[in-house]
Image 1 (cartoon, one colour):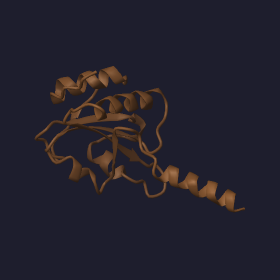
Image 2: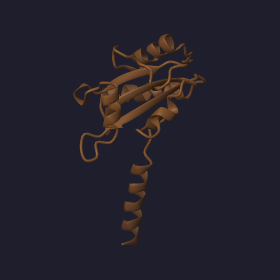
Image 3: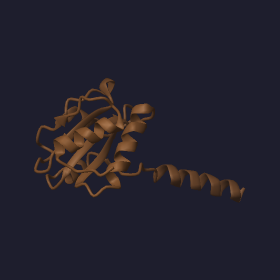
Length: 143
């Protein structure tokens, strides 16, 4: 019984502490504190528990950025469609509809969270995210 309890507790701790390498999770209490103009921030708005090829491409991009010396953050805003609808206020603030997920926005250095972000409209592939971040934010990300 104690072994089963240990396994259950370990799984819960793993899920609650789950993060993607190089991706900073934002919510409605941290969003404005992180996007303060001190650095460029590229944000993905998506379902709270996203998956698939586009998700994998974003993870690969964020890992490259995270391992570089670029003054650029890669962030996620997970929006819940059920229950308390966590972070739905953030997606509404930027006129992002849940049926359009995932959506990407970039705040250049010097832009606060109240500024209109730059909308990413390219292919949802890691190389394209990288190219956009380098060209738009002026961040050099070594490969």
